[in-house]
Image 1 (cartoon, helix red, strand yellow):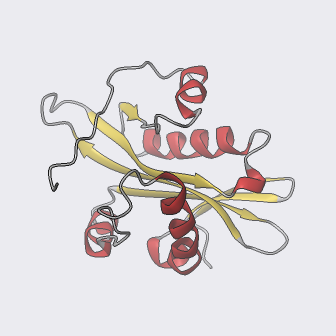
Image 2 (cartoon, rainbow, N blue to C red; image 1 turned 30 degrees about the vertical axis):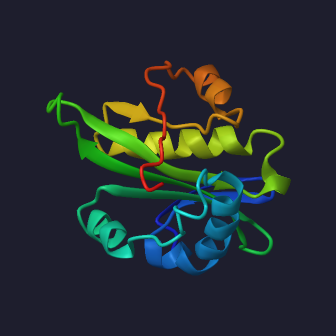
Length: 163
């Protein structure tokens, strides 16, 4: 694995990785992530559009911040962000949180905060003016983001139209 940039902590390594570097281990985690959070699992079948991720990566519009166990190099978490020019505010580059996940055994302590801040720092370095994070209604992530200085802006509602 070629780590683009890393920040070490006891037992953990935070890094920026390419999709190729983390895809194999990430897919196994993504399946666990999907089982935990997908609202309509019969409709929202896990089937990522990898071509779009690769395109964003080629355009320098994809940030994949990872956290690995330092001893085993096992992937234990990720924070994936897309950078884009906002449609209504074209002077603003937004860093939009696509997905974020930590294995349950790594959720205690400061790991999540450090991963979020690591991803934010890279987004800022790449020119983002605004970070937009989403939190599932049944999670405690909203409170975490507010403690990190995020302001609550929108609520998102889903309604099935296929029934």
